[in-house]
Length: 236
Ligand code: HEM
Image (cartoon, rainbow, N blue to C red; front, side):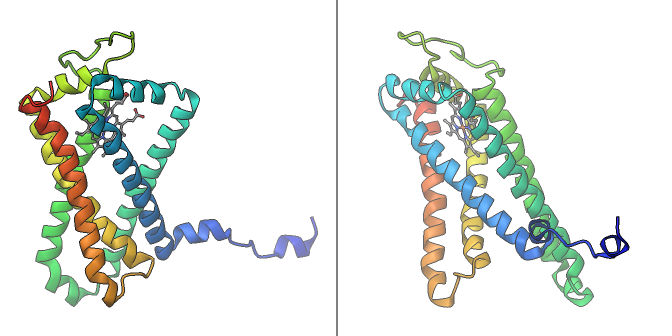
């Protein structure tokens, strides 16, 4: 190796530099957040088929399962997006706490500790919800009425499994609380995306608030409608 080559400064990888920068992390949180919102909207639209005859949601679930390896690619992609979202959010919070001037920190101490306590509690409940939900309906290891029943065509009867699941009031209440927290989180997060990408001008902030609140309510009411319709025997 020549001395000149050995002395050459190592060039920083632009992708790694972007990932390490605060603005890069903000963009990653915003874009992964949009991806997760897209999943939650799509998942809700699929699940609303519970209001149609059982064949609809069972055919839909079978089609998803038949994607085979592609389904696993989508699952791991979703998990990767989720991990990137959580890790970068935590790193951004740590950076902003470290950068906060002393006087500001004292002034805002009460509000900040209340906000971070709310974030920690709601974050833990949401994490518990996602773990429970995967054990419940994907891995089907939580004892639930009709969880392993087959439909007349010999397919997994997802319709009966979901109905059996929400006939349990404790499960339904846990879902409703989690759904409320998730939708508040989504509504707040959706507003922040526009801040990050620089579209939240004074003129647009009113319509954007309306859009974010509308999205949060749509997701909450759509999911809650499924749980409540089953709990009160309207879907059985
Ligand atoms: C009332 C509300 C909900 C119902 C009825 C519901 C129903 C289901 C069902 C039936 C499955 C299993 C699909 C199958 O294997 O055939 C599933 C999987 C899943 N759900 Fe939900 N879900 C609800 C809310 C949510 C929410 C709010 C989230 C996100 C925060 C979510 C995230 C997931 C994930 C990540 C999976 C795994 C997907 C996979 O198997 O690849 N669900 N859900």
